[in-house]
Image (cartoon, rainbow, N blue to C red; front, side, top):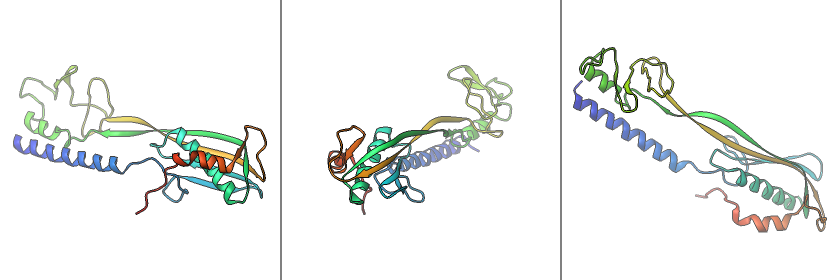
Length: 212
């Protein structure tokens, strides 16, 4: 394989990978105010008694905690209004954070140009006097061609036994509450909320799904 062909192949794969990332980034948005369904996040309701409900709102990793809790409160007010009540009392409320680690990058020997380096240096990498597969590394002087599929400070990597991975933490918030609905003016108690006032005050912060 010629050096020029390797360079062209690497550039082609790199451009394709970058295009895919741009497309993914453009499509990724925070969870809007919507009912949860199969494959989508949003709010859910469960009636417990005639005037007692369990509600929740779950967001994706781009939806911050404040937004999730705001949507939950708005849903409580909206549901109270839909059921013909005037106010609601929050008797139980909590927010959970679902944390997980996901790979944010995989060391692909063809995207990275390893195939080109291997073809150029040969099996034992002796072209420039670096035996046993060692190559120059900008940070630590040399990089070994023999690794075990993890990211390390010394840049060890084996493209055949496993890739090098970078990880990032993903956090998804879910807020839930149990509410009791009532008629008339709300009591002078911070646990009670007026359904109309909550909807009026939070309306400008509610982002609904785009319509086509």
